[in-house]
Amino acid sequence: MSAATLPNTASEPEEKLITADELFAMADTSGFELIRGQLHPMPPTGYEHGETESDIAFCLKSFVRQQNLGKVMTGEVGMYIRRAPDSVRAADVLFISHQRLQQVQSKSYLDVAPELVVEVLSPRDSWVDMAEKLEDYFSIGVVQVWFANPRNKTLQVFTSVTDSVLLRGEERVPTIPFLPGFTLNVSDIYN
Image (cartoon, one colour):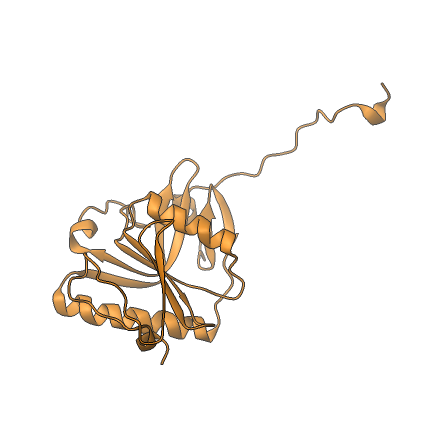
């Protein structure tokens, strides 16, 4: 066997995995998610994304605050998906009840799943990436995930990885068990 046909036995240096605690301690962690110990960049969003995010948050927050049901959070809120290696996803908008919020022990990212996660889709989001996020969210106990798409003014409401309804225009979000009495027409998001 010649040297050219010998298998490569030299090991390549492994990329160092970081923990969620290390991510949180970094000077600037905005614009990243942590997936299986590796940083994944999240470039800044466009203005349509920001407007859609704030409109959804406003609708939710107005209702949640009036009913004193919990907290609505925005701005790429980090939540643990798994540990060793750590994964931390960043939600555009989320709702977490007072009951679940009282169970949080972490001083950095949420270590208890919120009931609702909202992702506003960007042109660069691939279905493969969004399907992985969907699986991650449901794996930790999220009850509903919404995909808001400003490009076609739709809202897809998932109650599991395989069960969803696609809404548009004057169609209303189905009844939400953890937000009793909450109503939202898709058109309210995309004014």
